[in-house]
Amino acid sequence: ALRWLTSEAVPGDELFLHYSGHGGQVKDKDGDEESGMDDTLIPCDFQHAGQITDDELHTHIVEPLPKGVRMWVILDCCHSGTALDLPYKLQVDQAGKHVQLSKSKGRPKG
Image (spheres, helix red, strand yellow):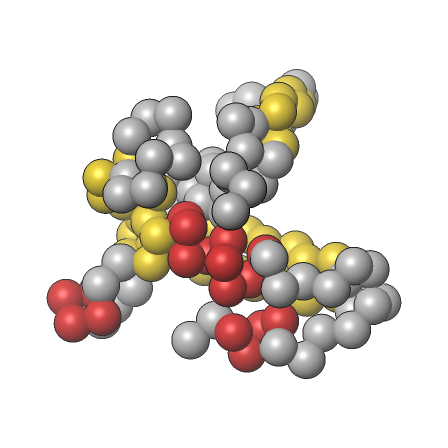
């Protein structure tokens, strides 16, 4: 369902994805998470369609991005800090005055 966002993207495009809703965690099935848990988005139809894991988000909206495409993503939910499994994590303190950039463990090459 998320493939529409990146399917026709070309270099120079800027894409925007916003999600406000519930987030959660499920047991990591492929061993790529230090915590042993995958972060998830919990859509309104999750009881039938399931939760959307960080692995699925990465596969469907990060990996297919052509070089030269910029994507802005705002996830307003619990457990969203690493929900795209990106190589870096940016954290802003509650006052909004200090920013910390750290390197994530990263996804295994497959």
